[in-house]
Every structure is written in C-alpha cells, then in structure tokens.
Length: 374
View 1 (cartoon, one colour):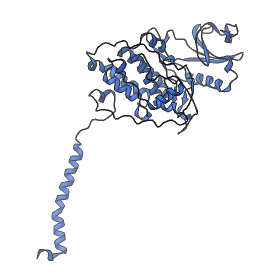
View 2: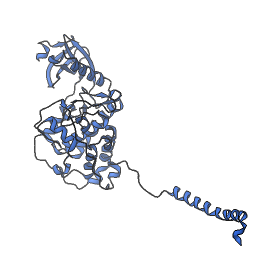
View 3: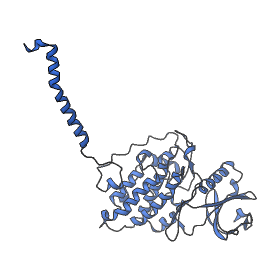
View 4: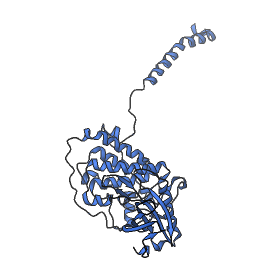
C-alpha cells in the first residue's frame, strides 16, 4: 500500500480495499467505484516509473489499447487517470486465479479442459488481431480464469498496433517473457499475429504437460533455444495426448511464422473443430497421467531481453509425415487431390481437332506441290 501514500481514495472515487497483485511495472488493487457502486481492479504504476517517460508511455499505451477492445475473453478497461502523480488504470475485476497458478496446482490437464481454455484464449487474442493489435506477451500469468471457467486475457502493456510495425524492423531490446515469446521476437524481429500464436502454443504445451518446452538458466539462453531447438514431443511427458493434437502443437510451435497458423482465430477454429469431432477419433485412449513435477525454469521473471547480436538462422521446419485422415480436417488446409476431368475433356477435344486438320494439310500441300504425287 506504500504507493497509495496512506490514502484510501483515488480522485475521490475509487476506494482501495486490498492489494491483489503486483508486477515489475505496477501494483494491482481491489477497489470500490463509489460513483457506480461496483468492485473494480485498479492498476497503479509504481512510483519509481512515474518520472520515466518511456514507462509512462507504455502504461498509457496499455490503457488505450485495451480500452478499444470489447470482448468477453478480454479484461475490460473502464477508466484511466492521475492523482497526485500516481497514474492508474481502472479495469474489470475478475474473481478467480491466473492460469499459471492453475497449471502449477493441477497440470497436466485433460484434453477437454485444455481445449476449453485454449479456444477462449484464441477468441480473445483473435479479436485483438482483428482490431489490428498484436499482444506480444501471451503467458498464463496474463490469463485470468473465473470460478466458472471463463477466461479473460489481460495486460496489453507491450501490445503493438500492426500499422506501426515497419517491414524488416529490428530491435536490440526484446520486451516480453523469455519462456513464452516467439523465435522472431527472440531475434529482435517485428512481431506478427503468428507470434501470438506461437506463445499460445507454449501455453498449450504447458497445460498438457505441466512443464515448459524450453528451460534454461538465463533469458539469453532461452532466446537461443526458441531460435534453434525443437520442443520435445508432448507425448514424451503425457503419453495420452492424441496424435492430432501433437501435430497441431508442432505446427503452432514452428520456427518460421509462415509455417504456423496465421492468427489466433485460425488456431481457435482448428481447436474447436477437434473439440467438436475429436472424441470419436480418440475414444479408448488412456486417461491423462500426471507428469513428473519439474520446475519451470531457473530464469527469473523478465520483461526485456537483449536480442542475440547474431542469431543463428532458424532451421527450416522438418518435413511433415503423411497426414493421418483426421489431420486433413484438423491440422492442415490442403485440398483433396483427384482427377481433373475438365482438363482431360479439353485435352481430348484438342486432340480430335488436331487430327481433323491433317487431311486439310495434306490437300493444301498437294495443291502447291503437285510433283509429290508422281
């Protein structure tokens, strides 16, 4: 409560009740909106950053970015203000836990629970993509879950507007969480909606196995693993994961953005398709077994990482084996191959036409060269 300087009101409207969260840039309080009579969450920028124009701009950017997003799976921003040098953001209060806590307590999840959470995350992030924003920091700590299982994506503090991202943009400092950011973010390249898809893939992996695919002692080492290393198969830690889900995860975690699903909406559609029809394909599989408990990583939480000065070229994705029948529906967008009967018909007509011209050619040849018949 030190940031509140012993006062219980912000702008004579928001009565602080208790602190409910904290991050590197801000503290979060549960408060009462005295004007509207509702409980809200108030995010207050830490005092040491109020004089830093860069952090203040980030805080303002988050408020403006999230305020323009109205979706059931995104935390709503109600207000923004300043009181005595304290900058704050008023948001929808979510009763529940963040997804990281739930993963820590009960992962690996069953397929149905995993798909339920993942499709809701995709719905919220996909809406942001349609609004022209890339979240850039998707991680379970930024996903809130109500007691009823409703998912809310939050923290658009480093979100980027697509119209502001320049082609071939490079950044020396990478903002985000090293455990979850994409290979292109790790290399300091500009993010795209496919970058968020990769981060959702890491969250999906963690829900299904109870652990992260990459673990290292430093953010820089993690960045290099995202750039170079292939994640271990899901079935290595959870043998009950269906093959179709394994293939989807492999595509989502591809090193090259062009090899992934392009947006969170597209990934959500694929997962919903599996959720609707996958039961008949995976009937008879064993129940999900509890994976051995392992720490996520020795890496301390960090929002910014120095991009590798000379990142190794990202390896091309390995050739994907021939798709099983269900992958044609869930994992790939390929068209069915078959005989092109129109092409065959047109070819036959052309052949008949050419053959029909042969007598005419012979007649003309003989008229102009009568000596040929002697």
